[in-house]
Image 1: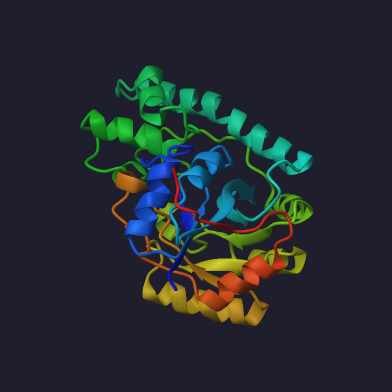
Image 2: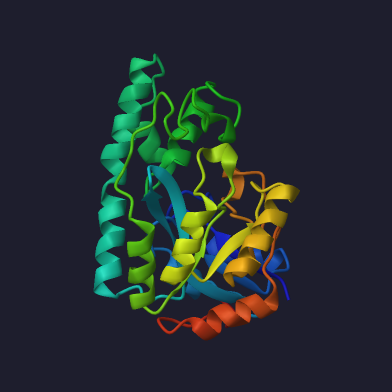
Length: 285
């Protein structure tokens, strides 16, 4: 059983539509795939309508959080998407993405890089605007060779020359909101140091006490040493260990199912969730 619990579509910053994502997941030999777009659930209906027979969809979202000045992402699974408090917080984060993107475009302009809002809006194609869309614009202009190369201090990384902060949820509040909506919380790529500063272990321990369910260990941005350390931390804190591709379509080089989650861990995630249930494919449209 092959389970990938972290994937993005055009509803945020992936390049596959939700329908294409589930079809590609089935073609890649996955049995379970999670749709975890940034701060939005807009892709759910399309993904469910196109869900192939034999593939199960886990609905979720990747929530933007910040603690002690460090940006972090929280994967929320199987929550009630209409629960009012969590819905309001997601909308607050999402609505701040546009002025933040325009601020980064202004900074790039001051640096002599002619990115425009129209260009970024075209690239986002209706999805929740994020740094990957601006990074793609930099690739189009020949400023950097790849999207990943835009996430440096020279350009878009936290604290970088063109970086602009946005509203991000306190992770303890995010955990409370997700739990209140019947969901399950997993800290996404906690040791991805190349993205910027990471959250210290003592904070992860505090989150575990507050209800964090797990940490994403097997991820493209974690080397072998980081994975070993995180497995030890998860054991110490009694946290679930997940593995995921963090697939973004052609925006990243990683493929669907490149990293996967143990079926027993997946079973525990579904057991703990009360806000929603995995959706089995019935053939798709």
